[in-house]
Image (tube, rainbow, N blue to C red; front, side):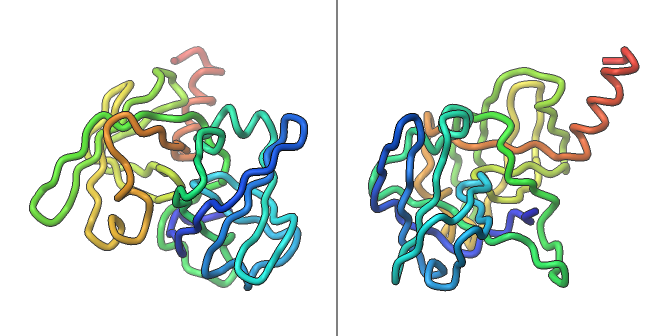
Length: 198
């Protein structure tokens, strides 16, 4: 489990394909602290560390992951948001994030608000892809609060610290992002669907 509080960014330095899998090699300031078999969130996708070097680590993404997330469209040199799993004695500073991307979304607009930024995203319509104003959403692994919401769009406000320390500064209209909707909202939607109320 994760919190959506990004520890650092990593740089994608190599992509090695093996069948339908992709081995992603990422250089980061925390790579030397990782261990084999450790779970790490990469742009919101929980992946297992399979190899280590002095300043980089390798994770493997299967075809399903590459198709469901934006990892399959990454290029060498791209920045990836990284977060290690939540410690049992740690603070839940963001919200409950599973590292299971529901779908991808597309950045519709970026608006500078004199020191902060408003990002608007669009996604496929689904009762499971639900946002509510002031609710939680995870975008590229970042825990955020929804500002405005519709069945297919939502917006978030980004403070300077988040903008400078995540790959949000690389996003522009048309950029693909990973979305994980609030797990509590998904359980409520599933319950109501089973009762025939959605």
